[in-house]
Image 1 (spheres, helix red, strand yellow):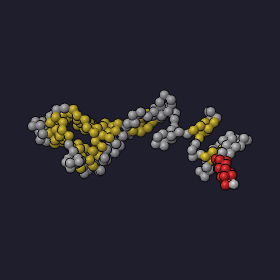
Image 2 (tube, helix red, strand yellow; image 1 turned 90 degrees about the vertical axis):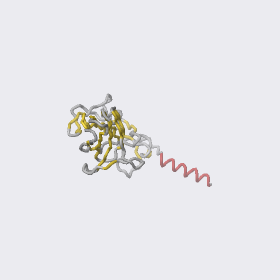
Image 3 (tube, helix red, strand yellow; image 1 turned 60 degrees about the vertical axis):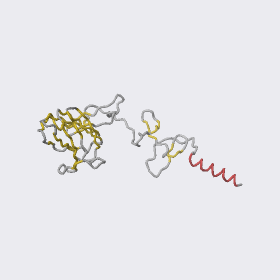
Image 4 (cartoon, helix red, strand yellow; image 1 turned 45 degrees about the vertical axis):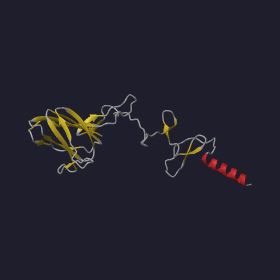
Length: 216
């Protein structure tokens, strides 16, 4: 008798998950979050494992998809008369070949700030600039070109007033040397504002050009 009761209990559980109803018709998906099942043509099934949406063109339910982060995948129909604001400037939103919203496939929102443009720095002198807002940047690349031996020291700030020297693991100021060459180095986005402090130790006046690239 025990095995019979077990089989009956198992069948009852199956019935709870799959209820055959040939006359049942699809009207709509239940929107009440307390409803844990939806009605299809011939059965009831849990919605947590299969989230469907009604396709008005195909006249049937289709699976709703998400990306690897759990974000709902959508396709928007856009035209070049739809604009977004970037840095105070209106820019047209574009569509891809499938009519979906176009997104840079590299996933980068790159900003370029010219810090020094052939700035002349006297021998033994130093130069800096107004801090730039890097709050958007997860990664920072600095491009430097000099015609003399110069030392670059990054400084960061939370208010664009008080700036702090960045330390390395040896508890020394983080510095980069550029001697009559073009170099690039990376920094982590770790502050609201960033500026570069440059010192000329070449024994003669020199010039420096510097750009900061911020990658979102």
